[in-house]
Length: 147
Image 1: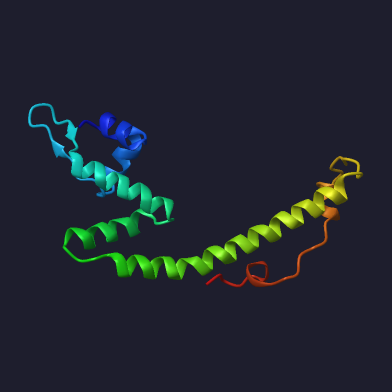
Image 2 (image 1 turned 30 degrees about the horizontal axis):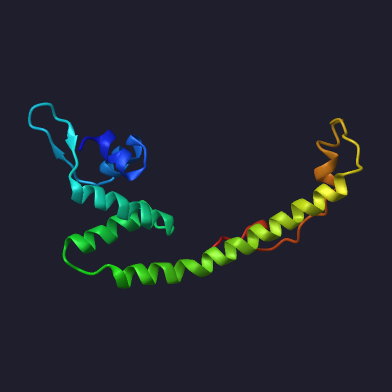
């Protein structure tokens, strides 16, 4: 299969296939006469695996590690479990931060509903944002590094 054919069968773009090939996740053969990249059924299955791993939030480097384990005959499953188990609390914390952000945005929109639009006058840039209460100085806002 050429790039366009494997892409079509996997439901991705040809550029996605090329990207994963450049990253070393896919390993096509080269056509001896014209140099085209040729993918077999095994590479199509790898591409589908990569798509599933991406759906679970794995990055390219992590997927490369997973594939390398499998290519060497080692089960990557323990590593996959550990990666997800360590990432899940981070994702939940990020969701909480986004929920808090959505709440602040809703509060701002409600407070700004009746406020007039101001014109910058040298002392004020945007009265809407300037009218919003300043956040408490914690974490990154206070200059601390994130873990």
